[in-house]
Amino acid sequence: MKKNIYFIQPNTLLGNSIYYPYAVGVLSSYALQFEDICSKYELAGIIFKEDSTEEVMSVIKEPEIVGFSNYFWNYEYNLQQAEKIKEKYPECKIIFGGHQVARDSDFLQKYSFIDILIFGEGEIPFTRILRALDKNESLENIPNISFRNDKGEIIKTQDKAEGVENYPSPYLTGIFDKLLNVPEGMEFNAQLETNRGCPYHCSFCDWCDYDLPMRQFPMERVKKDLEWISEHRISYCMCVDSNFGLFERDEEIAEFAVNLKNKNGFPDKFGACFAKNKTDRIFTINKMFNDVGMSKGVSLAFQSMSETVLENISRKNMNKDKLSEQLELYHKAGIPTYTELILGLPGETLESFSEGICELLERGQHDSINVFRCEVYPNSTLSNKDYMKRFGIKTAINKLNINHCAISNAVFSGGLEYIIETSTMSAEDLVKATVFSACIQSVHCHGLLQCFAIYLHNAMGVPYYNFYNSFINFFSEREGVIGDTIRRISRCIESTAEGEVDLSYINREFGDITWPYEEAMLLDYIYKLDDFYRESEEFIKDFGIEEDIMKELMSYQKNLIVTPFGNDVKSTYNYNWKEYFYNILANKEAKLEKKENSLRFFAADVPSDWENYAKKIIWYGRRNKKTIRAVESV
Image 1 (tube, rainbow, N blue to C red):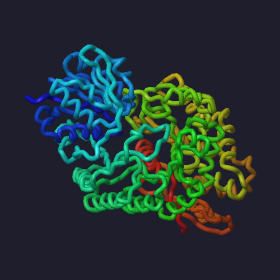
Image 2: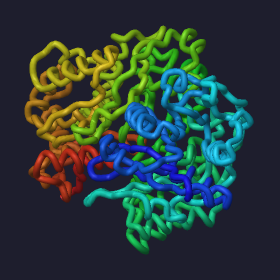
Image 3: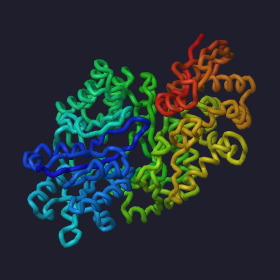
């Protein structure tokens, strides 16, 4: 009789969708391709969501091995299940691997029910472990693992740069077809791996083993994976390459995916982390996606605008001077872009971060800016004790709070280590920087006061930093919808240091899901839009805008915002607002001129209730400027 192997890789349920357990699928398909393995072992089951312990134990029968894929969102859950399994089946070997397993023996020292740890890429060591256990051989000669021997001693083996050059696809081998017990109404998202490795050594990242080269997987298999995804009507495909577009052949892969959508309708969307410096190729790929509605937006990632910070984290960015050119190129093609920053990196200050985010506005990035709190992963340079001491890094471990997740599932069984203070940014400054970034993302990028900020900058020389810093200071101590939201979010951020569940916002008016701060701020303001603009007018009048311009600009600004009601509005103006803002956003010379004109502001397919509006316009439409109405001359 064959020996039973089980895997547990619970992923996050987002609405009614969840990712395939791709990591354990790859381990399975790699190991079971060998006759000596598949003749002795059988893949008996995969737990891919956070089932109860009772459900897990009802599935697992006479296990020889149970492998756990560990990430920050699931490792606590995995520990609970592993302990129960070991208690019932003491002879079963419990193996832990994944990004949450640091390259030491800490998990073995803490948890007696774990038998083996795998570090880095798991396919080769897992296969060797199966062979050794079957033959009752020692594990000491298997690199990149740590284990507890028969005497109870913990042994860590040699670290060795070793990774796969290819593996059978878990989609094509039928692993997911056979073993996943899928509840009615649940949909899967797919992951596509066309290559593995990363040419960069960013200190905050644990993406790959620095000693392993980049490896491109066979094009034939990549295309067959895409065909499987299309035939199985998977709406969202996430390419998990570190830098999609790095290689010339990536254009061919993108074109193949587009052809499948045109033929079958799937995949509907294609997401990726795009390469930073292959600008022409990245534009070509994204234009293909955008032309058929597959684009999730183009990331122009910087992480920080500070040269000091970039040096500290071994990061080399795109030339800043090229950013404006790229933004103009994408703007002309109608392709949305977004820029990513990380808050709390070593060497960053409140001033450098706030001024950096406004520098992006100065260079023309008005579409979307995503700011992530700096996370510390176990196998990153950032987690090194000497590195942390050098930069005065202090952290707190929070129960992960997952955005856009059902409230009942928002606190996943894991934990994530966040930076809460550095030698250059105090805990208090980090709160201020978070509020500032949420303000820029919600009030500017989503359009609420974008026109006023742009006009004051272009016509009166007011720096974006001055405008939004003054906005926050003006309302921080005032009662009203703007000030109340700023203070509420500030209190949530402050509690991060205590390890509370605070990284999302909940308002059941917008559905039983969680929201990131910037989207929460936006929803609160649009929910009481008239109050927001009444309060904002009190703030803006201090900048001395001429009365007739102020009146018209306020009308134009209000009419741009998509709400759950009344999304077809017509107004007459005495100034050329439409052309004025279009030219500025296209990085062209712009002049405000008197010109009587009538404009229509409109948006189609907008839900009329707040819950679906929040989901479709704010969540799904974040990177496509869905909060801003189209404008046409009448």
